[in-house]
Length: 212
Length: 212
Image 1 (cartoon, rainbow over the protein chains, first blue to last red):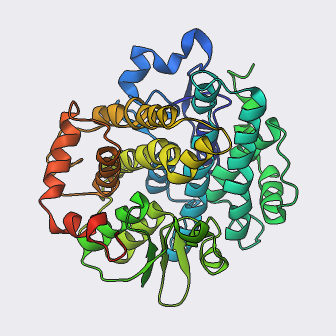
Image 2 (cartoon, each protein chain N blue to C red; image 1 turned 120 degrees about the horizontal axis):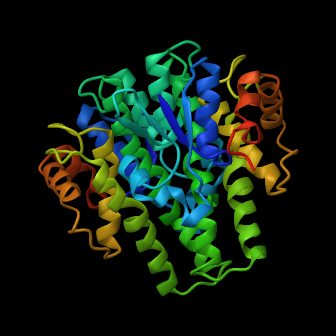
Image 3 (cartoon, rainbow over the protein chains, first blue to last red; image 1 turned 90 degrees about the vertical axis):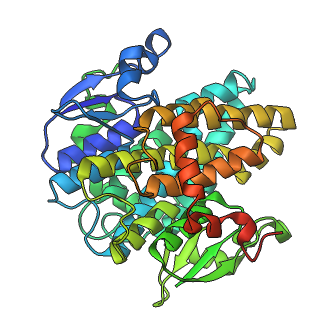
């Protein structure tokens, strides 16, 4: 399998964590989101993923799976242990809801192409963009998510799930953009537990071959 | 089960379609998103869903599941026929990817609270907001999704899936906002097939008790 990604993309980072937790090795194909107007908009990448975003997972038969959560669900079906979506339907729904709260409610509003639209066509200052970023990250995102967590060692229970695969990359972004979240104790606890696992450490953007 | 929703919320609309396809009946509890500053921000609703968004599905034991895609996956686990996420892992991933492309790439950028932020704190004109809406709906959304579809009767194959549950409400929004998408033939075909099914018709916003 080949993973098209970018070291700093938090969606690709989610998939790297999932692969590491499952002990799966893939070939990494970096797609540079900033070089030459974005390699993700070049025809050869668009043929694989018409959305022009990373990640995309190319299977050995050449078929391509896109959208980080769909990729992680696929990996969970193909190699169920350790399970990233729990077997019990209600717990599975709660894990997916936290993952989706991050993937649908925070990340889409704060990713590079949206911030570029605010700065470009809408001509906003960096200050406006920073307030936008912080608003959707905290009030619209991490603060309600804190209340969706039971307060376990990881997001749910004693082992990482799909929720942790999404949370940690989002927190990396928060730190990078200097948005403080240390008032969120349950999130902090889960983050601390993840930080002790090599699967999370090895997936960190700074550890990727395309990191600059 | 009790579904907290709003007739015009496209996320609630997705869940209504899924319930109808599975022949499941629930009690409907309307949450008026515009009245009194938004009933979704009242303490009794926030206690059920700290995100302050609809839908939320309350189970008979009182536990609550949020996020429309997590709710539909839960329904698919509890009552597998007809399957909304196919059994085959690759096809399941492709169905989920289209659902997520809508739920993560179009809807979060175009929902009411984001448009309100653009008009309020960022002081944009209705023209700016309309261009924003159209940009994320078409170039950022439906146009790449058209290329992700095989061109079947429904989004994938001869029966509706999770992808159709997400597509139809998004197209309802597009029509409402007068964004034309008739150049997207595969999307148009799937929409036409869905329109013939009572499960979709009965889930339409205009058919809900809280429709005004």
